[in-house]
Amino acid sequence: MEEALGPVIRSLNRSQSMRTLDGLALMICFAAPLCAQIQGINAAKIMESAPAGSKLPVQSAVANPAPASTEPLKIAHGFLYVEPYQTRFEALIDAKRILQWLNPLNEVPAVLDAATQKSVTAAATKQTSDWCGLNAGTHKLEGHFIGASVIKGKPGATLPFEEGAEIATNEAMIGFIWEFPTPPAPDELTLFWQGFVIDSKELPIRVFFGPKSEMLEVSTLQPKTTWKAQGRLPMPAPLASVPTLTAPATIRLPLATVLWIAAGLCFYGFIRIRDHHLPGGSMPFLATWILGAVLSWPLLNINLTGSAIIPEIKETSEAEAILTPLLRNVYRAFDHRAESEIYDVLALSVDGELLRKLYLETIQALTLDGREGTRVTISEFSADILKVTPSTQDEGFITEVQWTALGTVGHWGHAHTRVNRYTAKVTVSPIQSAWKITQLDVSEARRL
Image (cartoon, rainbow, N blue to C red):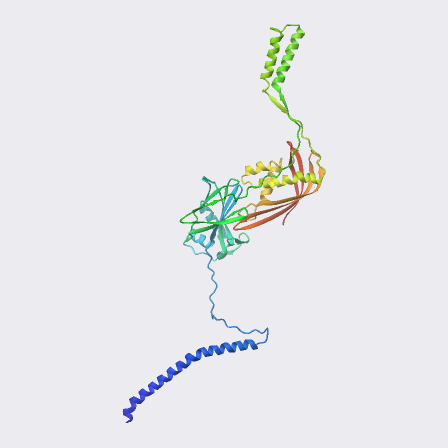
């Protein structure tokens, strides 16, 4: 009997075991959410019962958080600065892309040391000078490529770092600058761009003009873009008016007529002394004499002008009315970019050996620190005359003056401000019926 029922009993036991396992699985499925809920309730109770200020261990939901990415950002951005007499274009591209473009087979280093920076900028300068072109209307402008340099940060948010200091590749960009001489107020500028390297297909460009800006873009499909002024570009500031010296009226001396009349009188006197008669009588002689005077009137005319009337400057207010516009016009001269134009405007306010000295010193004072050499434009100027005394060398005057010059310049997408204050002794003299600065000795120069 047992042998006959054995298979049946074993089958029933297996069925019971399977039902038991299924029941356990079902219990686990229902128990798991319940345990999680109980655990959350217990945790909440623990937090409620914990004393204020106590620190409890916190378990992260992620056992092994992923490390932060150190992959450099892909950067390609341009900035077009439209100013009176000059337009400047700046482009920023991430250092990794430039390194891959320059040396496709080399591995990009994680850090750029001084030697790497020097070699990268030198190689980029040689191969990128023709990337940018600019037209004013239909006229092609002859630009000047300043060069390439290593820049830290992001477009519009660059960071200072010492030249030659190491910089992480993922924090570095390569900056390129071109300068183009332009009319004082161009109506239309067309930019051409060829710097699409590696996977770069677009270059967004922010155009700055006066206090305003707007966005343009070039791409591999449309590698040029046009900016139109539409009367929005501010005109360059005019020269300040300097008091003039009053000169007496000019006397015109007809030298040829005077010599003809003198010669006729001498001839007539000679005839009378010798008791000779005039050939043909006195009437023909007189008619010839008058006709010669009329014909010689426009010949050899000499303008005789007396010296200008030089007022004696004793009061600080009188000196300020003369010196302040002279100093202001010195800075206005550097709104121009061509050296010859700067000298021409500077010569209206400065004379003698001081002209070249002041040119070099002012260029240095208005140039931003760094390799790019971007120049500040003075927007605000004020001068305070401390003392005035007559000059012992001429009819001019000597002043002790303090002046402040505030300038701004856009660079890499943000504005730089520079404030310089000077204390100096300045000599002003009358030169060819005009007041000019003839001597300047700076006793203190501060950058605020």
